[in-house]
Image 1: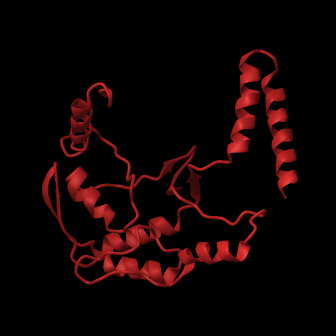
Image 2: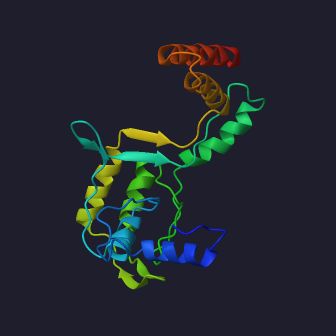
Length: 208
């Protein structure tokens, strides 16, 4: 991959070309990196792959299971000075409202956690989708079939592996400090694990 700053044009061309790898048989697998709308499945299927796709799930030792990877999450801190106000903000995600229209099916860019709203998204995904026009070409994106909707609905609802990019910065700091001591030969791996566990436990107890 060309350096973004040393050769920005080549860097951009690299990503443009990479988007066609699946369609041109230069890659065998791909990630549904942004899957906030149910019908994103068809954008990947017809735009990026150009053929049928199979969702494999997260590979485990004996089986594969669907995994949900959250890019954003909300919570109310125990030390929050205005918990009621924070909760008013967080509970927006729990409302039943679902925004869409019959032509373009525009809605929130996430899967609703309310079953009725999620079912409405599934229903809307069977409506007209439009055309995907990008540097990859122009491809007609048809509505999702009932069979695909049923498959995706079951796949998403059975996801039991959750990954979150966000982490506690204080915990990360503790881990980094202790790991550096391990690599410097100042303590064993077992001691490092114990130190991290103890320090994190003390930190959490002080914050509770």
